[in-house]
Amino acid sequence: MGDQKKRHRILMVSDFFYPNFGGVENHIYYLSQCLLKLGHKVVVMTHAYGTRSGVRYMTGGLKVYYLPWKPFLMQNTLPTFYGTLPIIRTILIREKISLVHGHQAFSTLCHEALMHARTMGYKVVFTDHSLYGFADVGSIHMNKVLQFTLADVSQAICVSHTSKENTVLRSGLPPEKVFVIPNAVDTAMFKPAPLRPSGNEIIIIVISRLVYRKGADLLVEVIPEVCRLYPNVRFIVGGDGPKRVRLEEMREKHSLQDRVEMLGAVPHALVRSVLISGHIFLNSSLTEAFCIAILEAASCGLLTVSTRVGGVPEVLPDDMIVLAKPDPGDMVQAIKKAISILPKIDPQIMHNRMKELYNWHDVARRTEIVYDRALKCSNQNLLERLSRYLSCGAWAGKLFCLVMIIDFLLWRLLQIWQPAGNIEEVPDFTISHDQD
Image 1: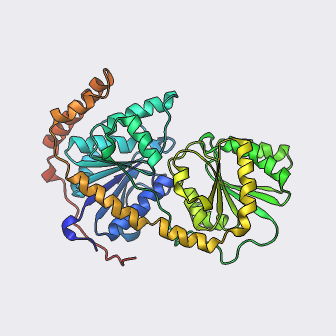
Image 2 (image 1 turned 60 degrees about the horizontal axis):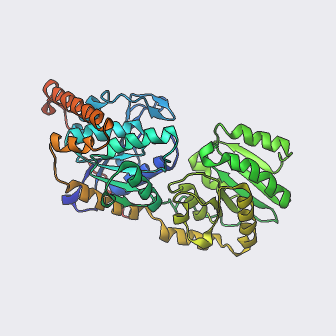
Image 3 (image 1 turned 180 degrees about the vertical axis):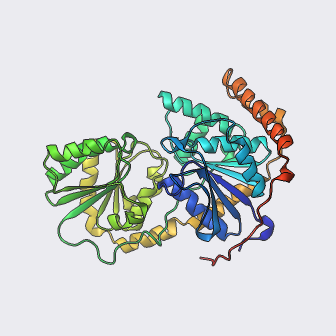
């Protein structure tokens, strides 16, 4: 159990959480579980998912606030700027929070929670899970939002060195404030099958959201060519998205119905059962900060073929992955190479190496160090904080200052209308955690 003197009370905030599944959701869940084991108090705040609204408890006593907001676009809530201030203030006081940890630049709720928390004098940490460009309209807009949020953040975390470089360039954050802590994989859940799939058939697994960013268009060109070159290769494609139609059309056009199996969306609990039915895992992403899917595949003993983009080259040792340019021809060559070295791969040895390389307890201990540093940051008054926002641009800086001044005034009004003393604090209770 962690030292009680250093027990932090952490509020994790993101629009992305269970029952939705993905890299960010898994990261928050596993990190929270390990921090609870280290003796910290962890509360998660997200928006309502269907009928899942209000307060719920998960494994290990993890408390989750599902705010009564419905998702607006891509699991994100509608930006309100100040609409979330009363409820966020109440949760921070009720749970006696000492630090707010926001996840994912896409998350509206994360940006609003960090803004309100800084107004109220809380220390905040932000974790960036994605890479963005600098040219398209969407990225330019997102980069400005990130610059606003990170102008006054205590510390930031990125999941790869490429991601750190990208975040520093986009937000103007001092590099010494940004830490690199990779994702990890639950090796107890993702383990190889006792017996490898036999026969002379080679099965290539794809599990991904079927969207442009994940390289679904590349798959449309790569799969027919690989099937033409290797009559004994079969594909299993798990995932759903707008590009699924293109893959279905490709399968019809090349008469590959018996060699390309489309599973649709795969629940996270069933991902391992799909992975262990194959030999090679194919990732065709066009941009990726880290890619947990590669870790899960390697932990199940699959050789990975992936595009050489973003933080992917940092994830696995060279003998466990074959990298290619995001180009159909180069990817076919990479699959050829992977098929030739497949007999040398021992799934159990690969799994044991993954156990040593990636561990959620290690991620939690490193995150704990970032929390300690954030809590040691000096407190600043409103004027000192406004000077940081002013440096965000000639027009944007003034606009950001105005947003923060209004937020400060609304917070002061809330203090008068509903004093902190009138908000009932939640009594602490601890669940004994067996050390792993």
